[in-house]
Amino acid sequence: MDYGRFKFEALKREKESRREHNVITVKEMKLRPKISEHDFQTKFGYVKHFLEDGDKVKLTIVFRDASWFTRSTDASCSTGWPRSCATWRPSSAMPSSRAGT
Image (cartoon, rainbow, N blue to C red; front, side, top):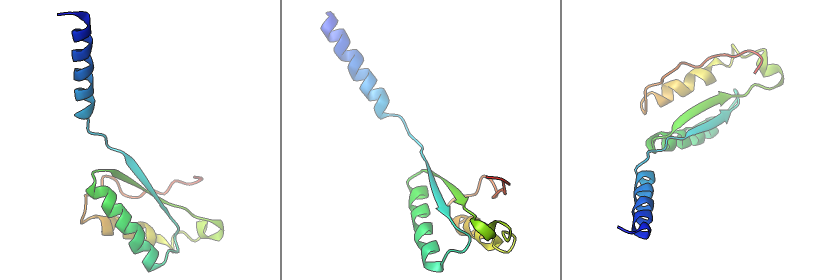
């Protein structure tokens, strides 16, 4: 076997190994506590599409101004997503409240 044939076969094996990899990406969806129903359904449609493709989804609720202090009244936003997504994939973690982020 000559060196050219060896390099060709090594390159071919490397391409084949790259092709077999299964890449999982993490998609992020940001939303605000006071989101309209139509916007919620639109974003939920994107989340369903991401989950069907095999991607992981990170949901981030962004509080602004006074909504940070009244976040207990806006808890429906943080509990609505896990209930809506439960039919598509079991949640690995419940939503957490991280102060100061």
